[in-house]
Image 1 (cartoon, helix red, strand yellow):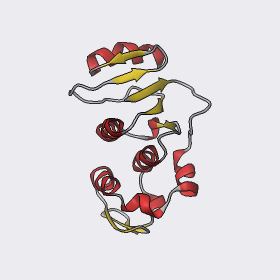
Image 2 (tube, helix red, strand yellow):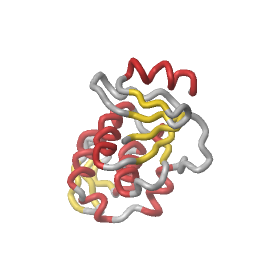
Image 3 (cartoon, helix red, strand yellow):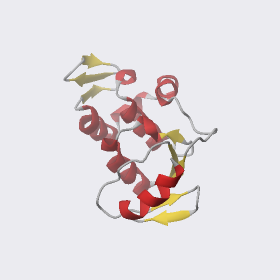
Image 4 (tube, helix red, strand yellow):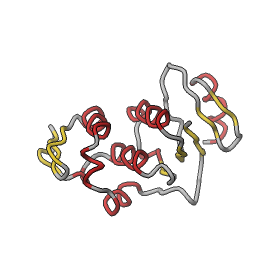
Length: 145
């Protein structure tokens, strides 16, 4: 299940780009889900663990991926840590929900993310409520951010 804490959270890793640069491992990039996330979010293709083909920037290292993709890859590979998901745009929301189907983890948000029209289960840690769609999420999260 996805757990979200809204607002300032001192234990959350806030600068996910710097954290990613210093911690990521080559095999994380070669993972099939990571490749799909990179293609979907950044429109880029993984050529090997150290080279990604970006239609905008050409051949780039994994450290030059968008902040959203780097944060998603961190969530997948270090689910015990809490990451600032406000580095992610709404285009990352479906991936966050998919990751939460595979493993429980917590994210920190400082804005209202659009998780789409489909049903989901998200626990809001600030209030210990479980919400199942955006109609339920908005009034709760809106008071917290």
